[in-house]
Length: 185
Image (cartoon, rainbow, N blue to C red; front, side, top):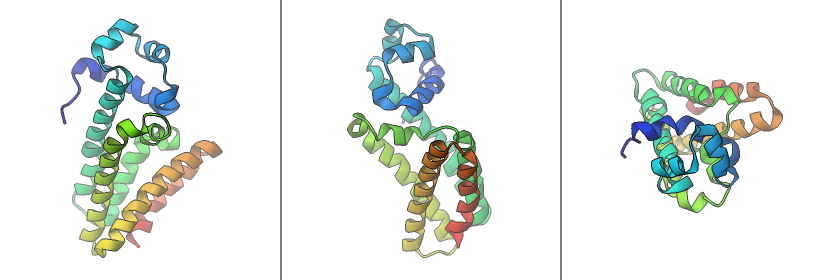
């Protein structure tokens, strides 16, 4: 997958924050313009495909981040528990310890679901496969490892939702601290 151009990359952080916060349907060109400092013509210059192009650029960047941080943490040396703990630390940092919602989840709630579902599914599948591979390398049965990898993402996503709903980021942090041991049991 090609890396977004440097100019586009400049706008990824504010776009990520907007789509995380409001989802696809809740982000207007006015909000985008305000967050990026770009007028409508400049937005279409950088993102000729409009909001879809913006979301695709952000998802490409997230996919790259997932590979370079969370998945590489799972590929490091060490036992399964240490690798899963390292992944958990990186994920916790990415979500500001439970303060930020997940953009992938936000995209699956609105009208953009059909447009971006395959890309989101691909990212989640690679993540689950990487977790399962660590568990299998640690001696776990393949079927159980695959089930646990699904449970891991359910726990992470559920903890993000609960932390925001309850206004208690400690809930997310506790989940992230317990998760590696639960996966390895």
